[in-house]
Image (cartoon, rainbow, N blue to C red; front, side, top):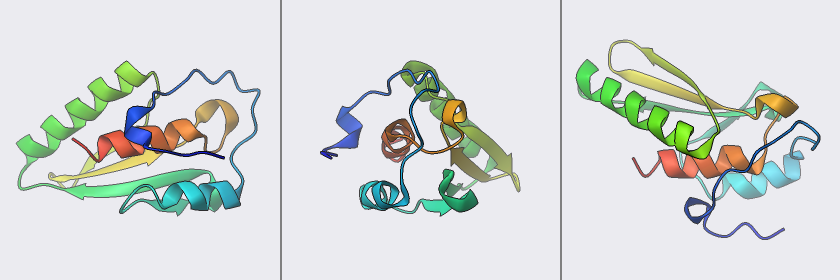
Length: 111
Protein backbone atom coordinates (compact mmCIF):
# COMPACT_ATOMS: atom_id res chain seq x y z
CA UNK A 1 0.00 0.00 0.00
CA UNK A 2 1.39 3.37 -1.04
CA UNK A 3 -0.21 6.20 0.90
CA UNK A 4 1.77 9.29 -0.19
CA UNK A 5 0.63 12.87 0.35
CA UNK A 6 -3.11 12.62 0.88
CA UNK A 7 -3.64 16.33 0.18
CA UNK A 8 -2.53 15.68 -3.41
CA UNK A 9 -5.12 12.95 -3.97
CA UNK A 10 -8.80 13.27 -4.83
CA UNK A 11 -11.69 11.29 -3.47
CA UNK A 12 -13.07 8.73 -5.86
CA UNK A 13 -16.62 7.50 -6.14
CA UNK A 14 -17.50 4.58 -3.91
CA UNK A 15 -20.34 2.41 -5.11
CA UNK A 16 -20.43 0.26 -2.00
CA UNK A 17 -18.72 -2.79 -3.48
CA UNK A 18 -15.41 -2.39 -1.68
CA UNK A 19 -14.80 -3.51 1.87
CA UNK A 20 -14.07 -1.08 4.71
CA UNK A 21 -10.41 -0.63 5.61
CA UNK A 22 -8.83 -3.07 8.01
CA UNK A 23 -7.68 -1.79 11.39
CA UNK A 24 -4.10 -2.32 10.23
CA UNK A 25 -4.63 -0.04 7.22
CA UNK A 26 -6.54 2.50 9.32
CA UNK A 27 -3.59 2.75 11.71
CA UNK A 28 -1.20 3.38 8.79
CA UNK A 29 -3.41 6.18 7.48
CA UNK A 30 -3.85 7.66 10.96
CA UNK A 31 -0.13 8.45 10.93
CA UNK A 32 -0.80 10.87 8.05
CA UNK A 33 -3.37 13.00 9.88
CA UNK A 34 -3.02 14.86 13.16
CA UNK A 35 -5.58 15.19 15.94
CA UNK A 36 -8.13 12.78 14.49
CA UNK A 37 -9.34 9.80 16.48
CA UNK A 38 -10.77 6.44 15.53
CA UNK A 39 -14.35 5.98 16.72
CA UNK A 40 -17.23 3.50 16.41
CA UNK A 41 -15.06 0.36 16.35
CA UNK A 42 -12.98 1.66 13.43
CA UNK A 43 -15.95 2.75 11.34
CA UNK A 44 -15.27 6.49 11.50
CA UNK A 45 -12.68 9.10 12.32
CA UNK A 46 -13.51 12.29 14.15
CA UNK A 47 -11.93 15.59 15.13
CA UNK A 48 -13.05 18.53 17.24
CA UNK A 49 -12.16 22.08 16.17
CA UNK A 50 -12.51 25.11 18.46
CA UNK A 51 -12.79 28.68 17.23
CA UNK A 52 -12.80 32.13 18.80
CA UNK A 53 -16.48 32.76 18.05
CA UNK A 54 -19.61 31.54 16.27
CA UNK A 55 -18.91 33.46 13.06
CA UNK A 56 -15.48 31.89 12.60
CA UNK A 57 -16.84 28.42 13.37
CA UNK A 58 -19.61 28.91 10.81
CA UNK A 59 -17.13 30.11 8.18
CA UNK A 60 -15.13 26.93 8.78
CA UNK A 61 -18.26 24.79 8.40
CA UNK A 62 -19.02 26.48 5.07
CA UNK A 63 -15.46 25.91 3.81
CA UNK A 64 -15.66 22.24 4.79
CA UNK A 65 -18.98 22.03 2.96
CA UNK A 66 -17.47 23.52 -0.20
CA UNK A 67 -14.54 21.12 -0.01
CA UNK A 68 -16.86 18.15 0.55
CA UNK A 69 -18.90 19.08 -2.53
CA UNK A 70 -15.74 19.44 -4.62
CA UNK A 71 -14.46 16.05 -3.46
CA UNK A 72 -17.86 14.35 -3.64
CA UNK A 73 -17.38 12.96 -0.15
CA UNK A 74 -19.58 14.30 2.62
CA UNK A 75 -18.81 14.30 6.35
CA UNK A 76 -21.17 14.70 9.25
CA UNK A 77 -20.60 18.21 10.59
CA UNK A 78 -21.75 19.34 14.03
CA UNK A 79 -21.61 22.99 15.11
CA UNK A 80 -22.12 23.06 18.88
CA UNK A 81 -21.29 25.08 21.95
CA UNK A 82 -21.53 28.10 19.60
CA UNK A 83 -17.84 27.92 18.62
CA UNK A 84 -16.97 24.24 18.36
CA UNK A 85 -17.18 22.04 15.27
CA UNK A 86 -16.94 18.27 15.25
CA UNK A 87 -16.32 16.48 11.98
CA UNK A 88 -17.11 12.78 11.61
CA UNK A 89 -15.85 10.99 8.53
CA UNK A 90 -16.99 7.62 7.29
CA UNK A 91 -17.76 6.15 3.90
CA UNK A 92 -21.51 5.73 4.17
CA UNK A 93 -21.77 3.36 1.19
CA UNK A 94 -19.59 0.75 2.93
CA UNK A 95 -20.41 1.57 6.57
CA UNK A 96 -16.76 2.01 7.38
CA UNK A 97 -13.57 3.82 6.45
CA UNK A 98 -11.99 4.18 3.03
CA UNK A 99 -9.07 6.18 1.72
CA UNK A 100 -11.55 8.97 0.88
CA UNK A 101 -12.06 9.66 4.57
CA UNK A 102 -8.36 10.22 5.11
CA UNK A 103 -8.00 12.32 1.96
CA UNK A 104 -10.81 14.59 3.11
CA UNK A 105 -9.45 14.74 6.68
CA UNK A 106 -6.04 15.84 5.41
CA UNK A 107 -7.61 18.55 3.26
CA UNK A 108 -9.87 19.75 6.07
CA UNK A 109 -6.75 20.20 8.19
CA UNK A 110 -5.43 22.65 5.57
CA UNK A 111 -8.44 24.98 5.97
